[in-house]
Image (cartoon, protein in one colour):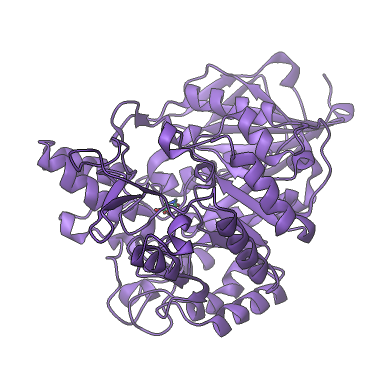
Length: 559
Ligand code: NOJ
């Protein structure tokens, strides 16, 4: 095993790439059954090409009973009928390639569906070799579960199997049994399956909760288990290592030091990981996401500075505001009302000018917002529904639980993509599987494409800047105005080149005194959501949610 952490950064093709995440169920429905599908995605590739993205992270489209919308896979080598066919995904890969877009498949191998043939076989008899593909334990003497470990979706992590009198382990729903990664046969099956997809020409994998695969259940070690990194090194060797693809791990438990272990190329594990420290700082430390805390900009800046500097020379950051499990960026960190457009653009600039690979979640590029359905019956997400049931039964008032769901529930991100202001926002001719956000008449892709000043074109410009500006990709990060309660300011530095990025995270105008070394500087305004700035005066005023980026060179500036 290679344990070295290197200190130099070799350029990789994905360093200046931008990834767009598609949640297929909610993206575009071509056949009118109310559920998005592969044909729908193919029909929107020109839109994505126009945006300028390089990769699509496709949330799971595999055969599945859809207990967790496809994160419960019944066949890794087949496509769910509601999404399409294998021929259609091959067509998607080929059509995307024509537009220089590569597909990242979602690799969900911490668990399978309980309808996966491996689990069906495992359940059929304690003596089949498949039994050991999963994690089984005997009950305690009184018949209760082996221990008190809890599922992330509520309730015990152990489910009783009547037939064998044993419990199996599931960290998500009871229909998502955890695979036993201690079993070499499981490892080999997964490597083979990955190679089968790689042979189809995909651009890599997003790896679902990959930090859980090294778990030691009996010691109650779930994340960052002792076998995690050796397992990933083995996976690298046996599958994607020689293929030059992008791999990104979902790792809720990563610290910068751990992220370097995953993403230092010398260690031959992953390209990068998603870390969630900036997300969880808005959750109550005791009650979690269902009891949100207000966003704290100063704390956010401390977190970002830490990750930017600690992964500066080895490892690589992934950059994101939201995904299919998180609330909409503009609702969480910006203003979904009066300053929706300004704040969505500001958030885009603030994120895309950092060092790392940016991820855009579908609809973010048009400023889609959270949704507030009146009734819990309008929600579909298994996590929200389980916790609603569990907590209201335990006495949490309905209204408090709904506030938690409005703030952080996963259906915020899953309402159908808003393509235009027609019936069902152009998403489907049928009845959408989840209700639409009623603001689709104003907030939609067609309106964005008709307005050269839209959020869409702001993203387009940021994506193309990344291709033009080396300092944006490789410059180091210097935090400015650490304690300022409204402004997120930083510089990127590469040789003599500088990028100054100023973002007002509030609806109040701000007057700033910049550090003396920045005053009087002249440069080139690259992007702004009010106007471009080519010069910095001693005092800089920022309008509500204003942000701008100025490039300059030390040699051309009077300092
Ligand atoms: C993380 C995925 O992003 C989420 O949607 C899913 O429910 C869990 N992993 C379980 O696969």
